[in-house]
Image (spheres, rainbow, N blue to C red):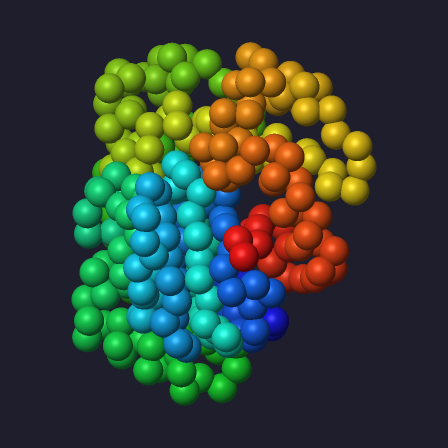
Length: 279
């Protein structure tokens, strides 16, 4: 697969980790994506793909693309035989300024891009992207569209600063202290988080803590799950195992097997750092 990425210019760089272009045959027809503090927008330029999110039993088809706020559970992405898209990896608070509704309304319920920006706008954007000469030109077009749609958002600075504290501590913060430091009530802080991120500060901290723990796993070496759980700040291994099933849909042992399968069958693949084979 071809993957091209770029960091946008200010002020978008304060909201977005990167813009990307993806094209080619996927490593697996279905991928499981563990929940992470990373909202996502995909503008699809190829055949429709499928998404099964939250506790849904069936996958839904997305033709024009999708918008995913910070998930609380693993979600599944079904690729066509060949895929082509551009997308945005947002910082946890970054998607809020581009949504016409509170982010909490989309929590574990991905929307189509049409639902967010309207059918005429997304049709025009997809048309311009399709006829662009190269990936970098496509990403410039996407960046211009995002700049045009960026709006002033109440509470953004508060949520950004508090989320940054959570991220810097890999989720290991006393939640009750966050509102005190910010000078607002815990209720007000939680409401702003749900409006812009889709989840509360406590839930975001759980996501950061779990993500840090998973990235500490070395699939090639022996793993002491109890030691890993303790170093990540979990009360015990049972608690860690529960979080694993919530955020990945798998036990730690099954997660490790899936990660090893991906690395074994597709070494060095552009998608090998987080998604897992669901086939």
